[in-house]
Length: 237
Image (cartoon, rainbow, N blue to C red):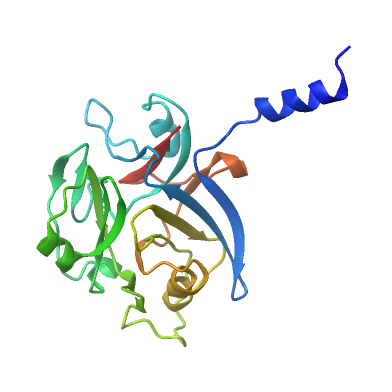
């Protein structure tokens, strides 16, 4: 018969050690779920299967990775055929070009931005990205920017009456980590942007989507379903 100490050791060592830290938080009266990813984790972008068909959901992504899908989230806006609206780079290959928005919904609420994965993780305002031309192994463009060098997007109003589910990503000043967030209730852009700046302390953050907002966080026993997505972030553990 095993001792109590041996049983406890078995339980501790058999529990999954997730590569991503996710938690539910409350900020200014609203509920959010945040997931922090370090630059040393295997964060990637996913779009199509080897035959070129859109993956579209977290379950499909999980079947196409060489490990466990420790985290996933929708990664930007997309057209009806699931093609990314703006810049999209996967495994060092640019599949679609950067866009100025062209009036495409929230994407056209300039400035928009680009999330770049290299040896660091960084949200860039799109014009700054074009000037710097960083070498990204993966990148996705979305909009609007939520926080730009510590300032909220200039068009966000504290008394806005537009409340929706929202998700986005912010990065630390040194590029060592990214924090992904999704609202669990309807919030304004101003409220959501302040989550990144005032609660999470991140100088730059990018809006990913609204009604499409979806999260896969097995550490929280959560995996959202819904209609097919375009680009998808994933951390492979």
